[in-house]
Amino acid sequence: MYQAVLFLQFLLLHSATQKKLEAACKEDVTLPCPGALGRNFPSLIWYKFNDQRKIGIVRKAKGKPAENYNFDRSTVFGEDCSLSLNSVTPADSGTYQCVIGAIIGGKDEPYNVTLTVPECVVQTTAKAPLTTSNHINIEEWPVLWIVICYCGIGLGKIVFSLLSIGVARAAFVTSST
Image 1 (cartoon, rainbow, N blue to C red):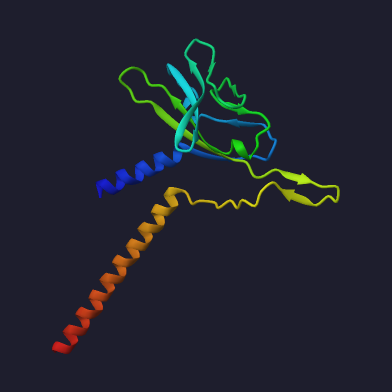
Image 2 (image 1 turned 90 degrees about the vertical axis):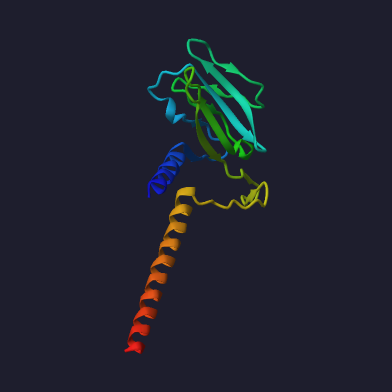
């Protein structure tokens, strides 16, 4: 039972460190770093995941100005440790991560923000909307909902098994007497 509680706490913590945002094409977006609000930390770094590897965007050390990495687009490091992206496009979609640097002996804290920018709509002279590709977006279920569903199915199997054993036992007792 204790392990189940720990597992659920892990899942809740995992879902609390992930945020999903959707923005319209060409919209200005601010990605929050929720763990940084009201905290004192030595540094904070923003990354973007591209093909399973992290690419540095900007780093801010305590008491120093923000340092930009060689990221392929301009960004602005906000006062609240947020990351601002101007005029986003579908190429900006993906998972961004702010990592709060720990004090010596501590553990860095990552917070993920998934940004989704749908295809840009292009107008022709006939005013018929066209999309730039035929890509279909499939929305994924959060991990917590998947775990809850699996637990519900497992609990249902256990209840059904116990009922089956009870019916079989009752039938055996009735046939014995």
